Length: 336
Ligand SMILES: [Zn+2]
Image (cartoon, rainbow, N blue to C red; front, side, top):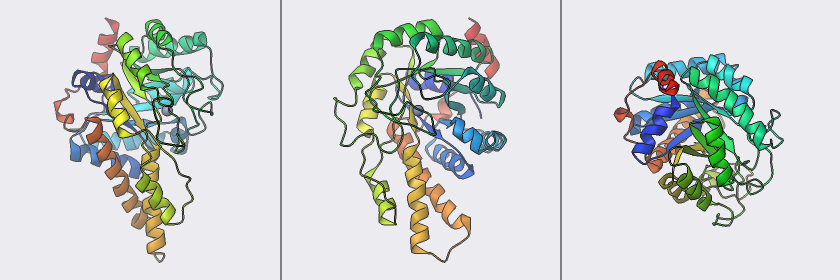
């Protein structure tokens, strides 16, 4: 069942857990997420980047998400636009039936140039006004994340534009966003840190400060793949050439969840799981040529990662406890 993302985050906040937001581009990925959610009784956030919407021509993606809602009526699913670069992108996502959008006004519409605070407030407020009139949840971003994901990002280190907690407080008051992505040193992609991150590079104390100032705003951690060693090793064992890298350790994410983080974006780990599984089949059974022979194991491998994250973040066991709320109810909620 498709639900507004806000109700998942509210339930997570009331019950002190986090929800993984998992990216999709194709059928096997959405199947992996939904099976993982079913097996662990987890509410889920499925998200699509602009790149994913282009790759699927919107229509394939829309029907995949409707199929998920039809096949798993017992699982509350939020469908979220990841990193909307402009109000137009967010509005077209709402037209496609997304129940949540991210207006990433931390960057200009080119998705590369850091925007000013005033520009960020203006575009984000514009999206909040329209989205809330449809009952759709809005995530904003203050500070700029490192790295590049699907062509979106300022590049550079995650420490270049760390979120200022005072500005975060002003931003939420000025825009009315439901959720706020914060930059604490994380980056998109597989190469986040050159060694296991410490407090110098991963600023968890900033999350704690922001949560003290904004106890009712759901915080979002982007770039939160853990980049497990065994997945990178598997890829390299079967002919891959990935450099050594460190992601965000699960214990740091759990610390964030203790301090107001309710949405945790994970994409790279699933990409690694898929690629490792496919390489293994290709290397061990080079005679195979039916796509199901490698897409099937890839789906299984991604499902295992999703289940692990759902259990670690605490969302497991909560799907059946969430009362579905219609978009119309949310419209009334926002009017108050
Ligand atoms: Zn992101």
